[in-house]
Image (cartoon, rainbow, N blue to C red; front, side, top):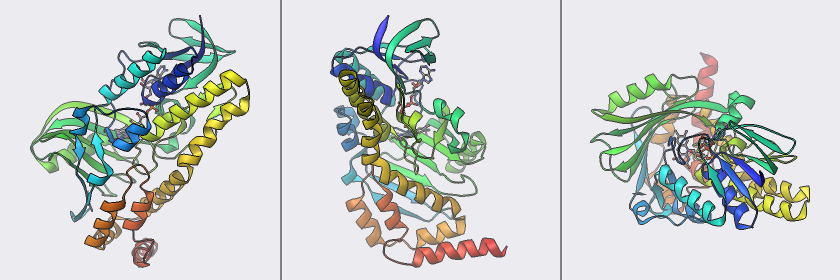
Length: 378
Ligand SMILES: Cc1cc2nc3c(=O)[nH]c(=O)nc-3n(C[C@H](O)[C@H](O)[C@H](O)COP(=O)(O)OP(=O)(O)OC[C@H]3O[C@@H](n4cnc5c(N)ncnc54)[C@H](O)[C@@H]3O)c2cc1C
């Protein structure tokens, strides 16, 4: 058996990559180790409509009914501010359905998808799976974070996300809770699916996420759990090389998730699409430069934004709870309004910098330096 391309990982990046390769009349096989495309769903499912459209996905009407109207962000002392997100058209989607929708697109273009087939090794233009050996010209690694974890465990933090029923979950309102003691370097979140139903999660450096999420849920009130997911997330930005000879790395496996929130449906999905196009070009030309073009194109779209997000992350990792309380206290209604009008969900470093006041005043710097000085004097 021979395929021009074999993609390991049948999720958003792998399936989009296969869709593009098949569209250009090349043979492509996607192998997915799980029993079903789209499961287990390990995602909050927050994505912008613009992002979906750029990925070539027409949102279902049902998806459009899951629009997020605002994000409420809490400081450790309970003070909060809200960003109206109507303009950014952010929706909560079911990854189970999204991944299947992309699988259908890929299959219609001619891709073959096999589930319960696990990638084991690639060498000498041959992929070994759990049950056979298949020849191919290009191997695409879209295996997600599992592929990265072995290479660099320092960029990984643990997360837990439960799907729950609770009358304190409000339709259309995402809630984010900062607390450097409870969730160091990250936050807790509530993503509504509907009134009284949603995904609640926590992530943080060096914490026991199972204990943290239980404590968080207890602090909110009564709830019933219908699903539990424990998954690593990647916060360190893109890896150095997306292409190694005839191996092409895409999506989470290439570190294409946002260093701030670890969201990756759009940025990893675009990784899959750009790789798919570059591979198609290479299959015609046999010119390695065409393959390498993928990394250049992805970096052109996301490189600078990811660099800024990494810097924001480093800054936020250093601040303590008292500093966050002061920062949130200093946010004015005018600033909330400005961010609500102009924020871009997919390129949000500008908004965070504005929220921190870094562009317009030295106030934030003063608050942060005060916090740092206090640490030194302790
Ligand atoms: C708790 C949590 C919440 C998140 N919330 C959001 C959110 O709200 N918005 C957002 O944009 N992003 C979110 N993300 C990130 C998003 O889920 C990922 O960025 C996205 O799924 C990346 O897609 P991918 O195709 O690169 O990898 P993955 O979705 O990780 O898919 C990798 C696939 O490879 C398969 N695989 C692994 N090993 C093998 C093997 N050996 N052989 C064959 N197949 C294999 C896996 O089974 C899986 O299907 C969240 C992530 C987590 C963990």
